[in-house]
Image 1 (cartoon, rainbow, N blue to C red):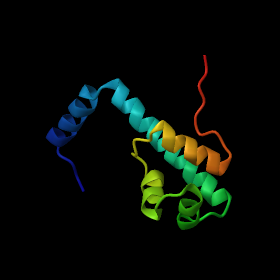
Image 2: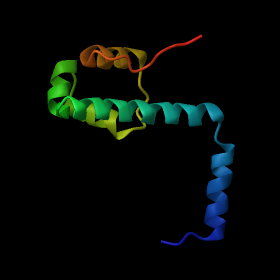
Image 3: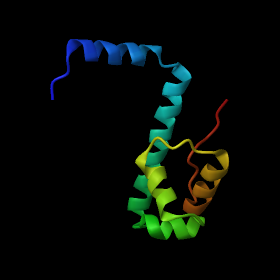
Length: 92
């Protein structure tokens, strides 16, 4: 599908106007989702089985690994505990 020059310009303008903090939030969200997905695959865990371990629904796990989820610290702590792997770290 070809995009018109006008569409490309509008997209670029929108991207340029997106706050850096929002771009960073989206980047982190996708990196966390990729990490969770990779850990589940490495361990041979289905989303259904992992949902039972974490105490949530399979739909929630699917949403997490799809990317774009706005993870809370509580959710990250539950996932990290269930996988026995820190998903985030704070450095000084």
